[in-house]
Length: 223
Length: 223
DNA sequence: AAATATTTTTAGACTAGGCTAAAAATATTT
DNA sequence: AAATATTTTTAGCCTAGTCTAAAAATATTT
Image 1 (cartoon, helix red, strand yellow):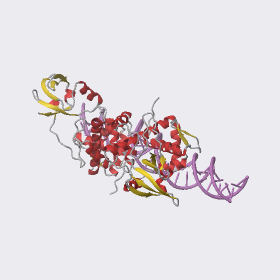
Image 2 (spheres, chains in turn blue, yellow, green, orange):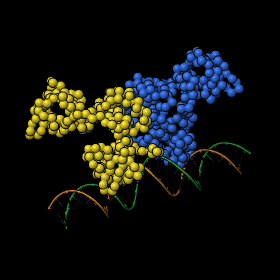
Image 3 (tube, protein in one colour):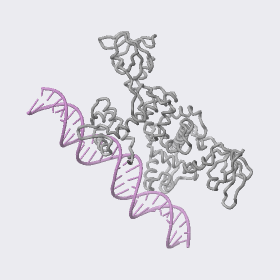
């Protein structure tokens, strides 16, 4: 089967569709895709037709898109590459977790299968990236981890920060300023009903108060 | 000075022009570029005009192209990135020297300055790539090394293989089969006037006979 | 220097990927 | 169910980068 060439633009659309499908649990609409890709709705319609013709997505006019098996495999592999490169940048080249995303966004398009395999091995076959997101294996399987949003944790419970949902530079830098990195121990001391903010004890020595918005973006593994 | 965006295609043309300028010591003609880029002459004319408009090359109709300072800086930086990535692939990911070129060809287009600096440091600021080609520093300066083509070395002289001029997979694999890698010691035992082939002693223990074509592609540092 | 060969440019066309503005289809309110 | 709002598609246009075929310019031979 002649593995058709897939352009970077096409790859990026597949990844966007994958993420929208995953988050919403249903087919990705034109609007959502155009927002994710920062392109016009008209461009999206064009691209969806192209991807459908290549059998990478299932698409019917006005009904949005879902990935075919092939499309899913490609999107998953892109995510694998993106996350492995992020680990490389942080672990080997000492980048901070808030600076790796745009670089990995370019690196994920490098084509060699062998490169990915060797990189994975070189990094020690990591299961999670620097933001705590799972790295799918070569067959596209994600490691599942028991985790809850900090906003859902009850008073008195203890846990450890294992992931972030939001990846913006400003959010990550805010966490840095609080010394809240992956692996940080947290204990819920108090919850303010007024605005759902919470007072926490981190690493058993420092207290911080986090807004609801922040709490909704932190994944905790309870201990 | 608004650093205009430069596409991968443009970058590849700049690199091709750099190499042709370097090898021929004069302005790069349309034909040579079209051969290097594997594109039609018409496409080259178009691209030369685009590059000239961006002040990356000096170009006049029918007179070929040379790089401007800006163009030269970009081309040199691409070569720097290409060669650093080759070192990464060989030294860190255990790739063979005959498989890294196409992958580095993609990796060299990754944009981050910081990435290059960190990679360089991570690799121990190497001065030569896995084929013995010099890696320009961040300012574009190449390390110069005293070297001669094996075909020019006199009988009885000894030296060390420090570089290859040809980079094809088949040539490199042929060298591998002879156990002729960079760093190999060679002593010239005999030269056959008939076809300019040479008999050599390598690493003081094995004899091989190399054709003139091979001898013209090996760089030796005399001891 | 004329004839011939080679190189380069022009002219016109194509694909990928993007855009805006308007029309059509679907969803949501009232 | 009608009216209104939102989403999606259509139509037409644009740029980058490629192509072929023919014309023009330059180089090489004779």
